[in-house]
Image (cartoon, rainbow, N blue to C red; front, side, top):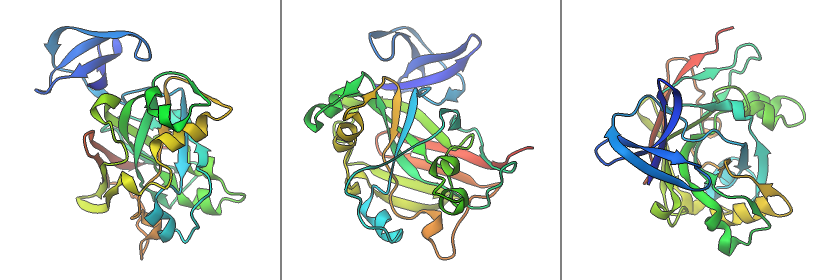
Length: 267
């Protein structure tokens, strides 16, 4: 099932995308009991498929990305958080910060996991039972703040408005039984920058959920970004930074493509 959130005259609404591009209304609780009903219709503007209750992120989680970063493999998943206000919709612009300026803004294609029911102390063999589904994420990062802002400003460098595009759809877990066997790509202005597989994760999706739920509760609607493969802008020679006028696309097998233009923040 491919779930979308789209704009209607009455406001945001959930629906299930049909193979022909039409949609049918989804009613009820996305994280509980819901049903699909009514005639097919043309959906409105696509929104991020969920409004996260929390945005948890795993850094340095692909082997070749760790290598290009000249970093040892971590013994545990490296956790940081993004501001939930950083979420951006498909097709809407990524804004380069200008009030608190950054001139080293980078892309990161990531598989996003959406938690469907509360999870605490979940063993890895039952971890996927708590997943509602998966979507594409661009974990946009201001490297100058993240790496050179003093004290390791990860949340600052990664939490600016629009720095977490999500979409275009939420694919339920039954359609992706093996989340660590997906091709994942970033395309910048038509050039492929990242092209790899989620099987290169150091900690796979079940291991991440087990770790994050240990002595902590993952609430329904929690979105977990699972790390990025090699090919990020800061590791290139010369480095590649996003600039106004760019177009960046995240493409994940079995989910779809998430495309956003890049503009300067208006201050």
